[in-house]
Image 1: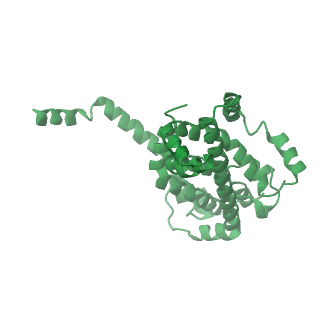
Image 2: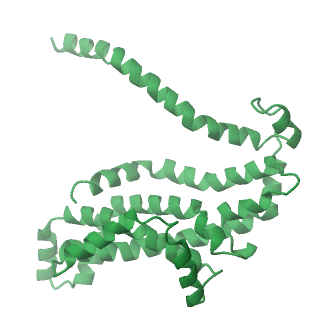
Image 3: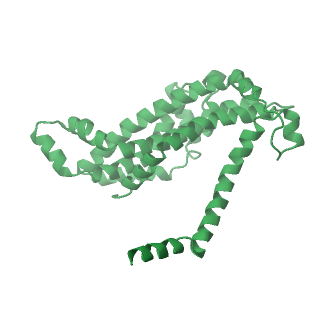
Length: 284
């Protein structure tokens, strides 16, 4: 009886509804994957081949495009992006987790107001703050420095980070905190020895989201930074364009180099990313 039921279930797994969903998934995969495939293939073509046969595969693999892109400045932009991204992620995780810990475990007068202000930061568009931020950075004397990118990046990623980590902290049993307090553990000790180790899924999720944002951010990096030595990859790729002729093979090779770390990070951390997003959405 059970065998028959299992067989019937297997036969019904790919009905009309499942077939439609499968076709939609394949269609979605092609829409997402084909532009990346075209970019990689075009980065291995010569200049004439890109214009002569746009949709065809390269007749010869021009790996020298990647060497030229790396020597033309991508190596420096890569280091700047890495420095800015790592600094932003560390700052966001440290400040965001401390804010989330205070808002989730301490009920003081005005705590809900601070939470609402923090959540309201997610509604603030970076374009609206562009001119005030520019004047503020000049006033502080950090315009055209790494801090001109790192500080705004941290500020704009804190609201969503605090919201996610706070939701996860609310799911941690209070009995653990009470037991640690009876053992003589301080508030900072509870945060560092209990809450942070237990919150690895949501911390990894926030790391992925913040890395994706700061690595690909373009607007602030092109306006707040004037020196070519400090530019990150998105703004540095603008230098690959020429007024008369652009070597699209080298430019596309630079784009592939820029996208490769983020794609690898998503592949390696996709399990933790989904687990953290699910855990962070349990309580609000």
